[in-house]
Length: 508
Ligand SMILES: Cc1cc2nc3c(=O)[nH]c(=O)nc-3n(C[C@H](O)[C@H](O)[C@H](O)COP(=O)(O)OP(=O)(O)OC[C@H]3O[C@@H](n4cnc5c(N)ncnc54)[C@H](O)[C@@H]3O)c2cc1C
Image 1 (spheres, helix red, strand yellow):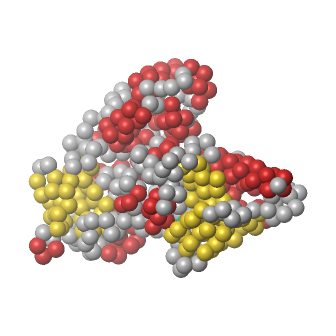
Image 2 (image 1 turned 90 degrees about the vertical axis):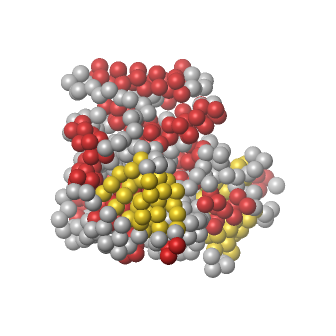
Image 3 (image 1 turned 180 degrees about the vertical axis):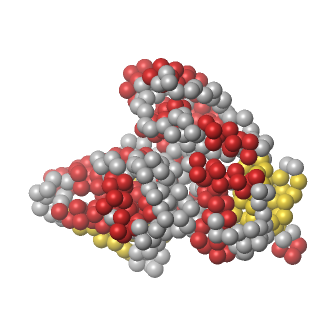
């Protein structure tokens, strides 16, 4: 196999893909494989999530559990110990334990090192990894022996056998209305937000999930003293992470589900969850059991909610361990649900599920509570509408009134509609029918091979996608262990397709 592969994006998916591809490659392969990684930012490895930014952006996974290498559990923590001399001067006051939540930029340093390590490891298997620092804006398919032409922002063209789209979380386009220099379409990097927002500004943050919390803490820890208001459309806020470790599910597991079901309904899923909870309690009789209400009660008083959550977070929270372990079956469960149940889940349950599933460290909960208690932060639930009045004054209209703001920050994650995203590449791919927008968000891929599907459902022979752009197919992709799993599965399928292609070419 003498192949040319391109990966668009040099973040976690890219590293995990190369790692998996190396595994597949036999060490005595005579002809080299060329992998070209296209990255639009200056760094290779950290991607959007772990870029050099405010120290207050914390991981939501404990330092001892997070790793980019599938077969090296605890790799990040080992790296922290080995490379203390590198990171400690930048974080002189930081104490990291296996159970603590490290700053994400520190994890980014580990990811940059992981990228270097993987390039060297690839070389040993005759895989040459090259990097081009440029944004890819277009892909075209043709019938050449190298069937994909890739075009960069500086109008250079390159040809490849296979292309893997791994461009991470897309932000809301800065050109999506309303346009105003004081409306920020993403909170990241927080360091840019800090520069562009006056410390005395009244700030409205649209969204109340992890990125909104990063924005509030990042601004206030930098001396922001103006009022900040968090607007939560769902009336919810993330739950607080307990002290539990990992747990292996018995009923909410691939083995049990595939043995007992051919398809699933939401009510069967909820029964499986209750069964798993009972099993967990039998296995951990010494732990206090919590009553789980789903969907959670809308929050009226955030300080009260956080007080109660912080008490509970001082102990093990079995339901969180169970939910975490479902990372390994989410794609399977999503595939087994009927479309009507998927749509119902997306419209009526997704926000509630996210508030419980993607919880926050105690440390962040305690900071948010203190800002609420001292009156600097306000929390408002319900739908909002942004308005620009005369003299360019911004206001946020909500059910109970209108709030004027000097700056507005959207902290709402990847836009479901890819046309509202900042990715010219993905918009072009959909426009030219190389890809199809998925009805639940992102673009559509075959859920076993990760090959793109076009509007007619035809599978691309050479273009694949992994990571957040595929979240409509897999429901939830925003956790490193899920990203790594998909990258490994995709590498297996790309390796297989390239081998088949080579054998076919040799035969004719
Ligand atoms: C803010 C945030 C915090 C997170 N925190 C955690 C956490 O604590 N724990 C956890 O388990 N998971 C977390 N995740 C989820 C997950 O681990 C990350 O999203 C993961 O890094 C995604 O990897 P990726 O390679 O798919 O995307 P990224 O790491 O974002 O990499 C994509 C790369 O592609 C580049 N790119 C994009 N478009 C182009 C283009 N057209 N041309 C060239 N380059 C391009 C980008 O510059 C970027 O470097 C977080 C996600 C986010 C967004």
